[in-house]
Length: 518
Ligand SMILES: NC(=O)C1=CN([C@@H]2O[C@H](COP(=O)(O)OP(=O)(O)OC[C@H]3O[C@@H](n4cnc5c(N)ncnc54)[C@H](O)[C@@H]3O)[C@@H](O)[C@H]2O)[C@@H](O)CC1
Ligand SMILES: Nc1ncnc2c1ncn2[C@@H]1O[C@H](COP(=O)(O)OP(=O)(O)O)[C@@H](O)[C@H]1O
Ligand SMILES: [K+]
Image (cartoon, rainbow, N blue to C red; front, side, top):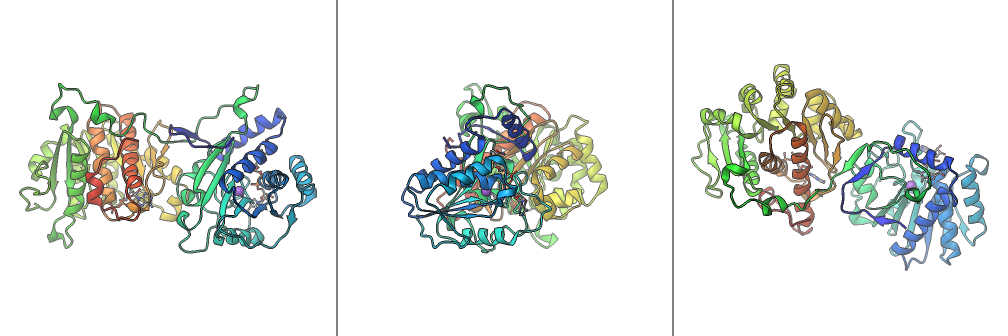
């Protein structure tokens, strides 16, 4: 029976690992076949999602994904549903399982048609055009492309079988030619569901994946019950879920603790107006987020000899000049770069050399990308036992990788992994489905967050939230940094998910809100 995803960490498997599992299971010739199981699961979910559908349009592609659709169509028609079926396959090229499903569909009262039917909002489209077999090099099939555009424009709910057709399982990137052409296509305009089969694939959770997939369901096709030992490939990534509720760390504080028990966060950033564009707000947001997320003490050094004596809204934050700030590097979790502009580069050599724990964001990342000496100093931190977290958005990651935003977005897991390993850091690659990668760790994909976060300053808040969590952890290298980055990203997104959708979320409100336990 298809299930919603449980609230636990979930292993994600790329197409190679999924294929290995599929082949091992197929070799055992399970009865009913995996395709019959997939068809049943899909028909069950279709009935549950659209109990009042007058009409179900099942789109079946030329491969086994289409076979799943044929098997589902046969069941739905046998249950008395009005089914229109579009099949793009050729009998002589079908797998034996697909031939069985084709015969089952042909035995039912199904309307076979290449023309899209007129559908109403309560109707259903089953998208079984392309699944795991999507070839990235294949030329766009114009019939598949046209059918997909019809499905995106339809008012009916869409249920994608295994994957949204045209979405790459490993990267979450739409294959050129199959992406929605409607400019503002989003889950808000159409109810979308995806029934992932056998495994959950990373592409469902990052890049274009979250919009494409909509609500995700899972069915392991009974693999867990097979009386054989299946290979157990290492997960490609984990879909992150915290081990304890977000607020548990604060609630579980010992009575006999003091402000020094939870670490010092020192924020360095916020270029002044003499550089032409003041960006002090960014550093203040990071410091404020660290404060509201439980750091023991928060210090702020504003660049360019910032004139502020104190912050009236947050008097708890202690301002430091350059000399006193630099003296605190060895005892602090340092956040450097938020709103740093061009002024931050001058401080970076010392910051890189002396910070006990260092989170680099925004202009600190840009400065390092542009300067081989700074890059080398960053690389020296790992061997010196000094952990570092980088929080690039895709453009900052592209600069560090000397590549482009499309190249980063084309494989976000790979981009984060490469950066983490070449720079010996934890990397939090931001954007929908943020990736957290560290040397020696299986990467995590963050499942929380939404486009309310697409507003200036939310990245600065994320930096402060990660730092607050990291500051309270025991010493360690990548594992603590990795956990802090995962926990911070999760809480950051969870606040946005709990925010009323019709109210804009400002970075300041984000900084001051602690997500409800979840
Ligand atoms: N083998 C089995 O018995 C099982 C298969 N399963 C289903 O089978 C799917 C995988 O089946 P396949 O390996 O046949 O692959 P697909 O059905 O996903 O796609 C293969 C077909 O699509 C065409 N194609 C590939 N890339 C294309 C592109 N870019 N543009 C246009 N056409 C393209 C290929 O030429 C081929 O005809 C899974 O996603 C899942 O839905 C599951 O039912 C589990 C059991
Ligand atoms: N559409 C979205 N879905 C999920 N998270 C998002 C989305 N847009 C932005 N975010 C998150 O908001 C933050 C924005 O950070 P960043 O781009 O550095 O902005 P800024 O520099 O203005 O602070 C990141 O954590 C990012 O992952
Ligand atoms: K599909």
